Structures are given as structure tokens and as C-alpha cells.
Length: 366
Image (tube, rainbow, N blue to C red; front, side, top):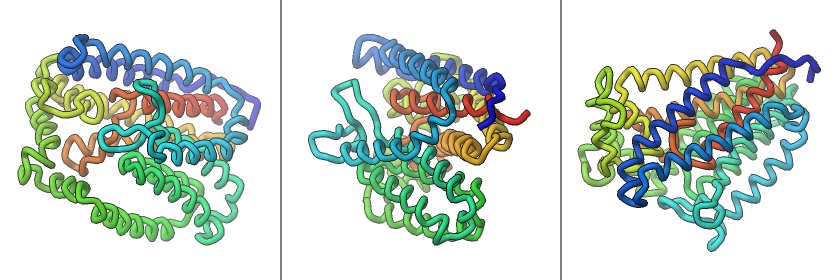
């Protein structure tokens, strides 16, 4: 790693703070009615979101100043820790179940989601492994089989919770990194076919996933059951029009749309701020993708380039899936919108990932 240091990418910093500000405002707006109904405090979730954001920004700034060599040294032990946590969360009596998924470790409100850590763990490990085996990446058996097997094992552990959304983001990120490392397109196309067949198998193995697919294709077939959430989401987005109903004026957040402050916060954003507000959020994610790819392209070494590509891919893939779900383009997967949705582990870990991106931007070739 060169010793020449630049200022961290200011555009990324500005975009992150704009998204965080929008997120805190929308979490309050989307959750106020529910928070007042359940806890007697309309700011219940907003205050916690600000706390998570503050912690995440602090960690982001710390990570942005660390020695980049630490990231390589922690690649292997970090993934090992992720494996241990993913196994521990599956042990009865140890893992906590929320919304039908045994995905949490902790006590009460103080809990973590190991699958979120695994996304960062796989990014660092694959960056290290693909750098060490860069000359073999074009070979499927000698270059791709090992990282794919490791990523597949992590995916399998996540699916045992089950958490298809997080697993999909993790595997998508792994494929982006492998392609960026120089893998042959024909190998990736073959893997995509296998992935599609595997996805079909996962859907057929669980009846609730079949219901989600059928609801995605025609939510009005079961408007009070599997299609309810998507229908309510579309009822929120549609009336938003160009300018929206106005901040705080959402109708669907009043106990009609489930999870309005988490997975479906984009629906409330579109309802209250309209096409202009929703479009602005999408543009901010687009700018973040552009600057992240710029860091990857101008990185001084392969490891840094792959980490930047992985972090950027992770955020963009998750944002695309979430927005696709709430607009009816994808089946419901239960995944948050980065920086905007309420959530401790997700928000904090995503900001740590951005800290990695800012750190690497300081060493980019100008």
C-alpha cells in the first residue's frame, strides 16, 4: 500500500450524511403512529435510529483512519468469527427468533445479527483470497471453486435461519467481487444457471416462499394474506404522485402497511415525498455507486480494489432488491434499505463498510 495519503472522498461523505438525515426523518415519520400506539412515545424508533446512526458514524470515522494492512490481517480470523456466530445463532436457546427467523444473538433489545457481520467477513476474505490467487481466477477448479464453496457455506448457514434476503445480497456481492478479480464470464453465466436452479429448489422447499412468489405475480389473488403487504405498499406509492402527500401525511403508516419503518420505508417515502423524494433517494444511491466504483478503479492494489468493489456492490445490490420488492418488481424477501430503514446491526455494519471505502479512497490514484 502506498504511503501517499489523500483526503477521504468528500462526495461519499456528503451522500452518506444526506441519506442518514433522510433516514432519521423518514423513520420518525413512518413509525410515529405505531410507536405512540405501542410505547406511548412517537419518537421511540427515531431516537434509537439516531443512536445507531451516531454509533455507526463514529465507527465509520475510526475505520477510515486505520492502517489498511489491518484489513488483510483480519480477513481470515474475521471470517472464522462470522462462522462461529452463524453456527451459534442456530443453537436452540442461544439464537433469538424475530419475524419467523432465528437470526439474532443477545439479550432483549441488546442484540446483534450475525448475518450482517458475515457480509463484511466474506468481502474481506474474498478480497484476500482472490488477491493471493489472482493468477488462478480464470480457472474454475483451481481459482473459483474454493471461494465459491466458502461463500456457499456461509449462504447455507444464513438460509438455515432462514434469511433469503441477506443470503442473496451476500452471494450477489461475492459474484461481483469474483468478476472484478478477472473470472471468465462463461464460468459466471454457468454459475448463474446453477443459482437459478438452486433458487427454484429453495422456493419449492418452503411453502411460504411459494406464496411469496405467487403473491408477487398477482398480489390481488390473496389480498388479505400473502399479497397484503405488497398491495398496501402499492397503495402507498401510487397516491404519492409527483410531490407527495407531504411529510408526515402518509395514510398507510397508520397500521395498514406492515413494517413501514423497516423493510417498506421506501413506500412511505414515496407516499409522503412523491416521485421527487423517491427519485432523490435513488439518485443518492447512484452517486454512491459511482464514487465507490471510482475508488475500486483507482485503488493502488488488487486487494483494495476488490474491497471497494465488494462494499459498493453490497450496498447497491441491497438497495436495488429492497426498492424492487416494495415496488412489486421482486418477490418479498424481508431486507432493509441501507441508511434509511430502521435497524441497529444493519445500519451500523453498513456504515463500518463505508468507513472501509473512505479509508481506501485516501490512497486512490489521482
